[in-house]
Amino acid sequence: MRNYFKLISFCILFLTILDSNGQLPQPVLTYLDGFSFTDTSRIAVKGQARILSIDKRMGINMTSIHSALQLKKHTLNQPQGTVTVWFLPLEDMSHFPMSDNLKISNKNIYTYPLLSDSPNPQDFNAANFKLVWDGGWHPNLLALFAKGSFYEDAFNLPYSANVSSSHASFKKNTWYQITLTWDYPNDKYSLYINGVLVGRENQFKEGIFHRDSIRTSLFTGNPALAISTIKFYNNSLTKDDVYKLFHSEVTHFDRNLETELQYMYEGKNRKPFIWQPDNSWLKKFDISLSNPIQLDSFYVQGKPVNVSISEKGLLIETINKCYTGALLDSQVYLFSKKVFEGDLYVEYEFNSLRPGGLSLLMTQASGMNREDFMADYPLRTSGRMSVLYGEDIRNYHWEYYRDMSDTRNDVLTSGLIKNPFTYPLAFGCLDKPLEKNKWHKLQFLQIDNKIIGAIDGIIMIEATDNGFSNHGSVYNFGHIAIRCMLHTKMLFRNLKVYNRNVVQTISVIKTIK
Image 1 (cartoon, rainbow, N blue to C red):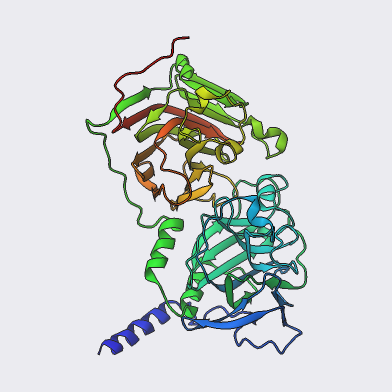
Image 2: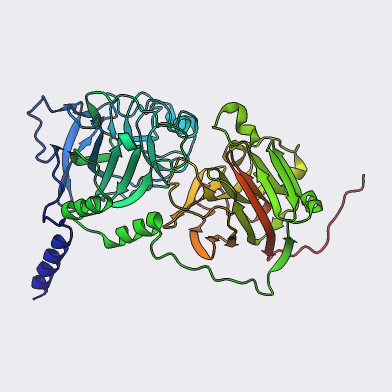
């Protein structure tokens, strides 16, 4: 009887994934459906490889970093289309430490190619098209339709056609279906994991996306990956079609994984943030940001267009131009001159006055030995992002408002990173973008190693740090800072900071000079 109900449930699921005509979209090209390599006009194996089977699905695994699978036909030069790739990691795919010694033998260690038009699919910069997982910085699943670096092309004019999903990690021995759709005439691109939309094209681009002509053959292969069925379609499939295809092809459906993906990237079932400080918390900072004299509580680092306080609030404005080296110092950090110790709660309101840009909250910013870096060393002047991750300042940084092109900017996204290790701790999306010219409330709470961030009372990030994971201790001392990148024009008001500390200062000793 139990098997009977299982059969009925499967039939109902299968019927629900069919379209109104009872048919699924049909591919125009299919690879690795039978794992035959005799038709060398279509497919070829370059180097050592093996065929393996895991969880009722076969895949090809390149057993050498010099091996590649060549697909000699594709549809990526057609005006519209879709490609689906099934892949399985043989080990967990998550954050890579950014250290040059790791690249002695292979300079492309961060690149895990799913499809590339470079004969060496690991070589990201050489490919005119690449669909890859990049393990550096905050791990990205991305497609770039141009030669060169993703970060250069994502941030600099002319913007290249790209679609990316930040903080994309994958579990070992689990099959995933990656889907990429394109519509060149309308500059529309979408990226999916297991039928869940995780990336869109840049909504704030200027002009038409740049693309490079894609070469005749595509290549794939990495010793850490098994690649299974690859299909090309001659139209840009809808979100519903992509979801149906995944469910029609999956051999082992993991409902918990789907729930996790939908929670992270589609904002489904997000929880409210309900918390109030009790008597154990001390208010350390409470300023309205409506009186110009209150600017004396901060150190302005960088060269912004404007940092000033009026009755409307604190205005931070940076240059509204594309990212070039000459302009990077025009970005800004607004550091508190005070330091805070112990459990931390930060709250303020913000209002974005124009599209584009990025604002983040930096907390627990200290020197590498927990020293007050602003007191012990010369004050820094750079507004560059490298201050966060590329210098000797420990900090957590929460990107709570981002209209940037290295992740979805058609909805509200949040990412929490631990620096200078560039260690991603949390990522989340809401199901809609943040309204401009409207006040919103930010709340950040850290109790011991637990961190929560909320926007307008909705939890966007949740993380548990670990002081024994080779990414430094759990931070509990330092300055806070508000940072704004290029294109940003925002107002801030009603900044409050609370601390709770088990370490009690009995007295302060001052050296007599």
